[in-house]
Amino acid sequence: MDVWETMADEATRESALWGEALRPPGEREENAIFSSLGEGRYALGLETIYEGYLLHYGRPRLFAPADADTALLLGDYLYAHGLVRISEAGSVNAVADLAALISLCAQLQADASAGDGAIWAATAAALGTGRLEVPRGALRDGGDPAPLEALARAAVGDDSVDRALAAHALRVE
Image (cartoon, rainbow, N blue to C red):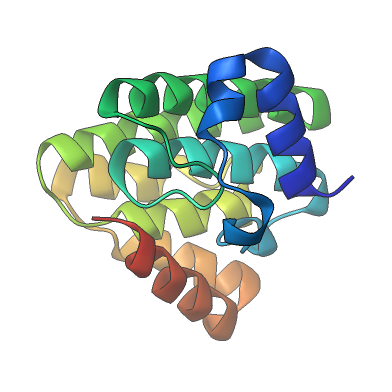
């Protein structure tokens, strides 16, 4: 089973409400945005958490909930389920990096601040490596996403980061 089938199947098994929120197979947009920047073992967890983020703040790829309350609850479920997936595939450091990502993205959204794409790209590229704290602090404390973007570009290259950021910009409000 691929990332998309697994995410859809597990959500459906978890709750009939999540199953009802799934788009029909032909309408799903099964496009990886940030998982291609990181290790393959993290792909399912990253895309699950990112789908939760899109349910909260953008245009989700697999789900079309009937209302905002369902979108919020489904997004929270996907955050939690994605963190479980990461913990199964990685380390405590990877889970901590994603918890920090979720928290900082919520702060950025609440403040209507830029930088969510840079933190997603850097987190995917350096997940669990211990290299995110200083550049994350530049965004959190100073509003500067440049160190995060530079980290991602150094890790996976300009073209990959440019593609991910362009795809992300089309999905987030």
